[in-house]
Amino acid sequence: MTYLNQPDYVRYICNCGSLKPISKIYFCRHCLKIRCGYCVCQEVDSHYCPNCMENLPSSEVRLKKNKCSNCFDCPCCFQTLSTRAGLAPVRTILTSSEAEEAKDVKATPKKVYYLFCSLCRWSSRDAGIPDQSVATGGWPELENPHTTRINALIDYHKILASIEKQQCERKKFRPKRSFMPATMYSFTSALVRKRIGHPIKPPAQSQSTAQPAPSVASEEVEELPSDIFTEPVDITKLTTLEQRLQHPDAQAEKINELRPQHRQFLVKRSQRCRVCEHNVSKSDLCPQSTKFKILLAALYHIPEVKIVTCEPLRPGKASELLLKFCNPTQHQTQITILPLDTSLSTSLLEEKEDLKQENTQQGCESPNLLPSTVRQVPVTEDPKSIKVAPNADLVLPHSPLILPPRDDAAEYDDTSDNHNFQDDPKLVVWRKGNKAVIRLHVTPYENNENEEPITVGFVMQHGYVNTIATLEHKPPQKVDVKVKLYLTVGQLVGEA
Image (cartoon, rainbow, N blue to C red; front, side):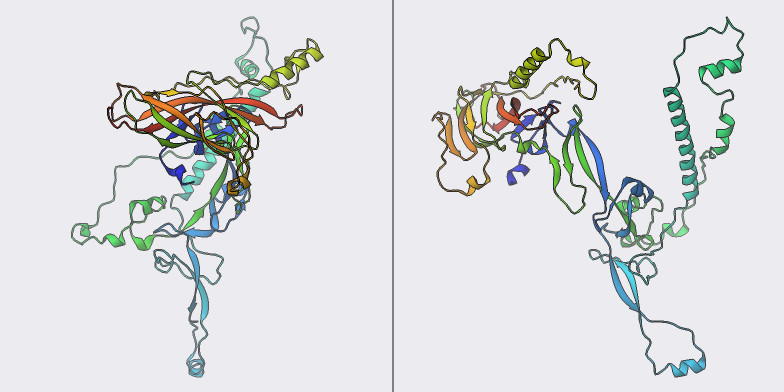
């Protein structure tokens, strides 16, 4: 899998016009289209702490301000702090007689706990935070000096949000009435306002009392201390810009003024197709689990193409190009290489035949008469323009390539395959299991510059078996999916 981190020599075209490798795209089984990161919606499924793996619902996370109450981050290096135990002597106030008797008795130390960073060796004792007698918490927190002002603004905006919500609900349930001119009837202004739906008295007076006082700009600035230009600056005792931005409420200037911050929660996201609104990726809600409930990555549904070797490229001369195709599905597929100007419309031959049979059985019944919960509204998409221009000719094969289904045990089997495919020896060079290598020829244009890489493209048509259970409980459908690819085969080596 190390080739996934290499430069993108083979790129697939998404419907939005972006070029992505196969490891960074999805395949929607409902739309039968490729979806990249720009064509999916991100949704938050769950929140969890990466240290203690505590999983909380969104309502509790909002109350805790998206921070874990048990875990802390180091204010210097931003790593997770650990709780250390120490011993502190017990100090008691005794009288003179009790002190003489307690000389022979040893003082029992008390067990205390403090926060410690194992990376930068920072501890809560360096910041002057007192030790705690319980390991679970109770650490004092630095209060924000602007808490009163922030709470007042939050309460005011909550009032505004409730007023807007009431207005929207009132407009939603307001009956539509015909227009009646006020000149024909003796309507007063209050009656007109009531008929329109506006309140008789505007609620400006009630809102003004809840509105906080606006902020006032001031030109007064605190003066700099007198010793700022005389005393030398010790950089080791000053905080960096990153450390100050981690504490936006305090923004401490010195290291000893830093305080540990609660660790922020992480989220597990799910990706949803923007067109059909079906999930293409959904992880397990359990924080300890790395499994996926739904993972429609293109790597598991679309044949993968790799560049094996390519002869030195010269302008106007044909060079041999070896491509490796891999079938990741559990069904046999047939791959056909088509030119770039081929339409990417998906052919559903079996579905069209089934629709014709249903229409003949049901007579002249229109599908639009079905309820909205059953009827699927078609969504049309306009493909975006692609700015990649091939600068070489690619000789396409005339015969298709058949790949058997994926077999995990066949990779470790040294015996010969039993598949009897009548392959063209000029096309198929090597075959094993669900993989095959074919031979193509690339001819770069003569007017190419040596600095530009040689790029070729083609449309790959492959058979895909759609196993999604539909409402009619139909058998799996066989679909011919077309995908456009661009390959960067290398640089020119010079003229012949």
